[in-house]
Image (cartoon, rainbow, N blue to C red; front, side, top):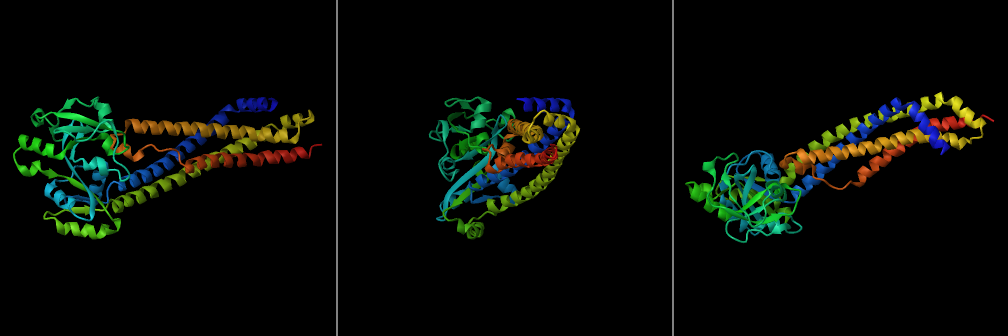
Length: 395
């Protein structure tokens, strides 16, 4: 208790220096954790997205655009292609599943996607999608809501809603046919959380009643393909272009998204290196602060020795103060990091939120915090050990 009181009094006398050191180190720790988190989230999100599809087929455009829109709904909606392309690909023996996506309508700011029940069965390669309420397209003119879309709109299963043509529709663009909500998906951490899903056949009929021209009614934007054998990716990429009558772009998401991951990793690695240097400078400032403190307290230490304090008491006093500063900075930095992540998840648009999808703390992040604590303790031990050596010479 006496040692703790001494440390408390010392910190109280130097509270401004200690506070500045703690804040600087806490900021560096929170920024470092944030960059590591972003890097891990990018890797985690891209790996999960890549597993959704082996190939993406759409109208001729930039491959990166098709990959980002198909898996994250980032960018403008690709041009339409004929539904006959989907019908042809669905029957191909090398293709395990084909999921059509037709995105031409909206409802209260949410994109409406025309698709089939294959999406619920094959979107996740490991298991079918789970429903929080209800089920898929089991009746004519049914609609399924993603978890986030249901939460924000307040709809429940059994209720009815209408959709309209375009992303910024007018009253004239609204379809007269109401849709009955048949299911609400459980949260997936993907773009489906913000999706409104309608049976493609029902959507075709609604379009044909509202607009003239069967081509528009039967058009789709993308087809997500999963193969029986991933080793056939390159041959299938070339074969699909010759198999269908309409010019199409065939994208391998793994190739396009890995390029984004490499670029993201290079940027985050550079930022991490800069932050590590900042954290190291903060550690050094704590070291010099402790060294100066022990030098200023030389008379106090000599007095303690004359009153019978042992040498290891001096070491504890020298170590405890910087360790408390570093431990407090680590806790404050971690709490600040969690606060920033919670804020990003709350305020980012839905299509961007998937990129920072929450995941448990990794072993690397835990090791990082432990390393900071150990490194700080080691630096603090240097002046403490020096003071111990001086004390042993006082007899």
